[in-house]
Length: 336
Ligand code: TLP
Image (cartoon, rainbow, N blue to C red; front, side, top):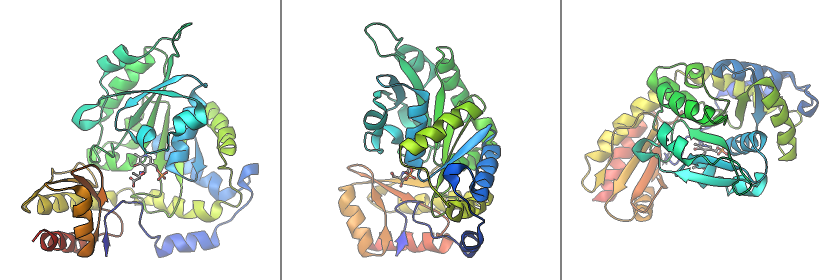
């Protein structure tokens, strides 16, 4: 089976297993797990922020960020197809009492500064007040689009004009960084917080990081406990996370494989696919996406239906160029 449903399906390698087995641990709720502390230090450095917090999932990282930046009843502005709004079980409403104002970010999923100026709501006796702008990089649902530093700067500057902070859902931030050849700290120069996942292209079995300035992370740490994410001897899972931070450059292979996959699928009658920026390939199918996913599963390829006629395939750490060739051949057979 060639599993292209997500880059979350990867298995840890021997180095990660060994790191987990030999990790020095302590109680992280007391701040005493040296491995978690080391991961938090290195993660903050990797994104050019003051401090970082280890969280079990990307979803929790995003939700803690939203909770920490806002008060109940506030509004959060985000792109219409963003993960934080569409795929996190309505957590913004359920966990933080937020109302979402979603706007169209076009083909790339970027909110332009004019839209931000026009959509932000000033707090009054009648209106909630927008208190957070959330961006996503890479943009998952738009097909792993790598948002440039200039695009992020422009959006964050528009929000900052209204004293509103910007959070980046950077589940795949390092994919953007590698694709654009822009260091992650530069991509985040003008934003207030970022979440990135160790458990996607970087290959760790579990874990994500939330980073920002010192005071923000201190408040976020309290909210992590509130959301049930205070872990104990978490060094066992943080140690593979430290290994994962060393896998950034390898992401270029996933991007190359994704481009080859998209080209191969686009050449098949009844399918179309554009060359991706990073590791996410979107394929438009003539028939229903669900049916296409079933048919290719019968030929040994797993993918995710992402819309009525859209299917997502992700390349990742367990997929090499032979798997890509094999996947294209299997899809060809399924389409016969
Ligand atoms: N996304 C998953 C699915 O939920 C769609 C995937 O397979 O891509 N932000 C973005 C942009 C994400 O794509 C994801 C995961 C998350 C946040 C949440 O991360 P986890 O799964 O660790 O909670």
